[in-house]
Length: 146
Image 1 (cartoon, rainbow, N blue to C red):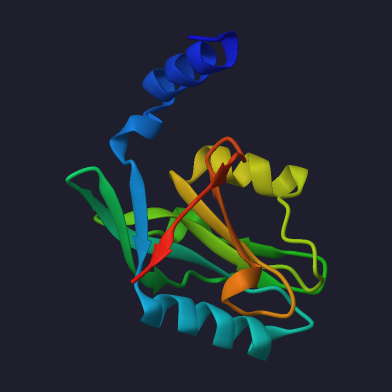
Image 2: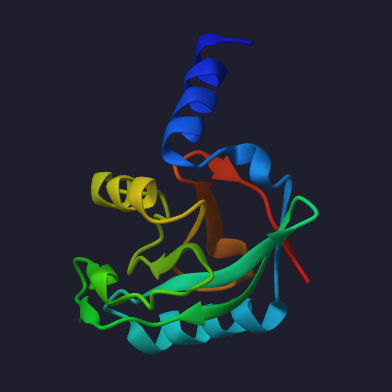
């Protein structure tokens, strides 16, 4: 095991974000369609939401979006995560970027590290191929649309 793997495992244990919780990610087609539609409607502003789902049999299944109060602009989006329901099944986040770059910013990486296991960023042209997935460390993840 290399040093990065050891560090990831230790951090996962400490922060409860162990990547071994799931080996696959499935996202409902309806959720993807909603992300695309909302991104297009919000443009040139960003949109942001939490991803709703569950891990079962080492498959993370994302089946909905949870919207929280917040503010958006063409420079960023902020959610009031302290208003999250006490009993929830959020597993991460999704947000749009107004340009073609769907790479996480430093602010995104900080948010990822504090708010779930799986995160999506969609950039222009706001279609299925412009959605990128990341773990809580900002590393690329793959997913299937079902």
